[in-house]
Length: 417
Image 1 (spheres, rainbow, N blue to C red):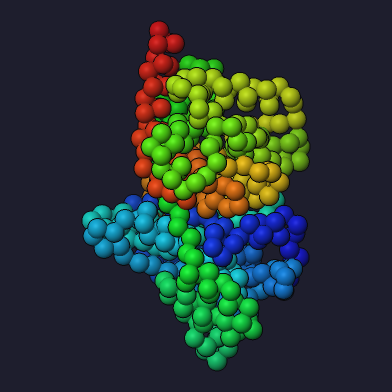
Image 2 (cartoon, rainbow, N blue to C red; image 1 turned 120 degrees about the vertical axis):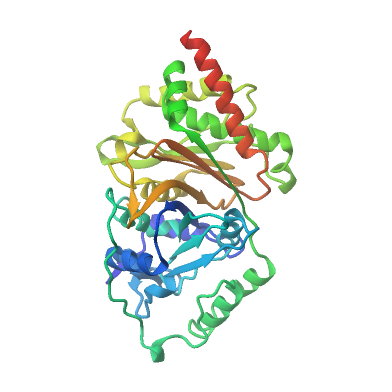
């Protein structure tokens, strides 16, 4: 099967540079017994067709089935040693360019040190999900009820057909080296970029209680989305105060346009996701004033008509991954901006991968072009996580979010009394 590359997808590929890969990571914390073999079976039984395809043509022109598709090359597992952090492991893998000689995704089952919990981490290129036609792989893996994962036969390409020297190892340089012969040496430049100019992304995550966010929204007469964006603004402001982002040389965020929450609204009956642009008020002193400023802009967008809150776009299930992928795609038309805040509302339902319960979902998106920071807010169960990805250390981001929430909860209590 072959599908043409759309204009929107081509724009996404243009954002993907060897020195700054354009990738998403979805981290699902699992509580319960699950093995890498079971993950492989679950993926094999539910893999969407697009996830069997690779970009084809030079320049990239179409999606074509990968004749050497090997599921076991895309589903991997690792155990982090004591002292290793999941954040550092994710940072390292986000810096690895996608391999366009194969479908642009990988699933990892990661054992966490000194814990019974595991992390299911899905890495993918945003171009894999297009205009709502294709469901994100992560959305296919979870169920609303626990259940055994049935074995599925796994087919692999014949050894004689596989590119010589190809490896699915952790070293991106050896990966590109193994591919160079099979694609006529076109990856030589990419190999140099990987070995000489590796991207250096930093990630940080923080979790906040949904009940607290909702209580603040009710007290301020605004939406949950407004509170989420205000909390993200507090995290960004804390980074600026600490000087961490400024050390990387980005423009000051206060006067610059910011593409905020591409999923905040959808246009009319077409349900087309589009970015809502505003200046993130990180320069406004006080969490309450920041929230008031954001709520005013949101009301203006709703009063203009033709748009609906993103919550109406999210049905039951693990739709947050598809939402974040669509949010990343909408950035192609967003114009120049320095930061992105994408909010994917979730549901309070419990979800399972096999017999393992989903305890949390965090999303990360690498910044590209002029972006210096992205924040992906993800709702799941009783919590909302904010996953930040930047070009400099993000110390202070989580503290800024939590301090902002404490202030807003206190102000909400006063307003109710």
